[in-house]
Every structure is written in structure tokens, then in C-alpha cells.
Image (cartoon, rainbow, N blue to C red):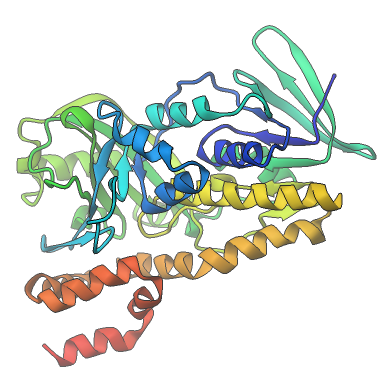
Length: 414
């Protein structure tokens, strides 16, 4: 038997972020993960500016240390969107980086990034259990009990006051306590492959999102990695996969082999290992992130960006906010649903407009002619290109993309 007031289940970016910010406030807790680190995680591997922001809030030396590990981390300065007709626009993550010591974003295999975060866990405050599976969770009148199993033993953590669900897409806590179920209209199927030797990578390592006709209303990506490697993949709403009876793997490989917009870039490229798939619970719908005795962070709370599929930034941001909520809950000895609802309110007040906008942009993919039109105009018109770049840096300006008048004005000025 062990006792711990605060237990985090899952030591990926969301769980580690929660743990690191709790330790920063000198709050003792337990963190459990069934894997032994380093371990792989199927993902696009992109680390957005939001990830950098959270790391800097934690300790501004961390990002510099990542920037100095060129074998594991590669700096990225923007994103390239490519319309179905092949026209592209480059959007920098930041308009002015002249005063920045480090890149505004990074790309790193999750095998490496997650391990670096895991190594940062402060054992003075975090009781860390890796290689430990949670086999059962039960409420009692004295708190919450968690049954755990390692390769060689079993143990129980008893009388916990608060659980943090950070176990990702298949979160036990999300299903058992919050009643969250998979919804195909708010869930994306994704596949990921690693390639060596993909040609024409952007000189500033922009991540690339291509809206290829073969994969609409989904998308195809190329994200550069260290040592000439690249993360290559495709994603599509699960409801669209079912409706089209799509085979993402076959469609992606056919595009790589036959689509003239990208096939020349793979002429001398080599597939490394197997193509693997995973699910992405999208933040296109508000879901409960808390309840009596629990909080959900990251993918467990379905917080992935609906347009880009990026989830690490919101995972770490939610972990940071969860730690603040936990600190206040301990001070007031309040672990009830009413008090913990403050976490939901804080997260959504800061992030819902962004998630809602991304959902709107996701739906734009259903109208490839409009997507082509906007990108064509931006490709030819520097002023419009700069305006869209500012929109992706400034959320208030970005909201114009949700306004039908924005597109009507473009048509009038043709």
C-alpha cells in the first residue's frame, strides 16, 4: 500500500508538464506510465510555438538546451500550406525573430522529445513509476484507490484526492469518470512514416501541410527531422474515412508514387521501418475536462488542433493550467466537481476561440475550389500573403478567416 494525494496517470508531454509545474510549486505527487522511457509515440513530431511558450514558463534554459541538441531537435520557422492545385503559401510562425535566441518552433521525434521531458522530472517532488500499468481505479469514501502492476509486482495507491488523466487517446479516467466516447466527427485517423532523403526541404525547415486531391477532405504532411530524415504522414476525419471507405496508407503511398506535385521529391527517398497508424481526438467539441476528484489533460481531454492535428502544445498548456488548479485545490482542500470546473473555464476561455477557428478551417477543406482561390490570391499578392501570415500569429486577426465577408471581398477584388 502507498498513499499519494495527487496521482498523474501518463508521463507523456501532458503528464510531464503537469508534474514539472507541480514540482516547481513544491507539491509532492505520483506519476505513473506503463512504458519504460525512452519509448516511441506515433505522432507528427512537430513542437509548436505554444510548446516553446510553456517550456519557457517552466525554465527558459530548456529550449536553449534543445536547440543545442542538433541530433535530436531541428528548429522550424514556419508552415507551408499547399492547396489542391499545388500553389503554396509560406507562413512564418513569427513575423519578427530578430530578438529571438532560439527558433520559434522545433521538430523532434517523440522518442527523443518525450524522453527529454521525462528526464526533467524532479524526483524531490515526483514519485515516478515507469513500466507500471494501472489495472483498476475505484472510488471509496476515503478517496480514490489505484491498482498498479509492474513486471514483477503489484501495489495499490490508496486514498488519493485527485487523479490527473494524462494517458492519451484511450484514457481510462476520461472514459470511466467523464464518460467521454469516441465520436467520428471529432476524431481523426492518422498514419505516420519516416523517410530518409526527401528532396526540396524548406531552407528554414518549414513544416508542410499539403491538401492533395487523393486525400481530401484530409491532408498530407512532410515535417523535416535531423540528419536528412522526414516525418511523412496523412490524416482524415474518421467519419470521412468511413464515408469514403478510404485506405489512408494506400492513398498516401499512391500519392507519393504518382502525384506529380510531390512524387519527384521522393524519387531518391527511402522508407524507414513501417507505416504506423493512430487516432487523434480533436478539440472541435467542448468536452468536460474535470469532475469530482479528476482533471483531464492533453489527448485524454481531446484537445488536438482540428486543422493542423498538432496536440503537444495544448497538451503541455493544459498541464500547466492543471498544476495551478491543483495547487489551489490543495490550499482550499476542495476536490469537488464545482471547484475543479475552474480548470475547464480557464482552459476554454483562453483556447476555445482558437480551437473553434481551427474547426472552421478544417471544414474549409470540403471546398477545395475556395481553398485554391485564397492560396492563388495570396501566392500572387504579397499584401494578402502578409495579412494571412499575421492572422496565423494574431488570433484576433485570424478570426477574420471565419468571416464569409473575408472571402466575398477577395472575390470582389479579383
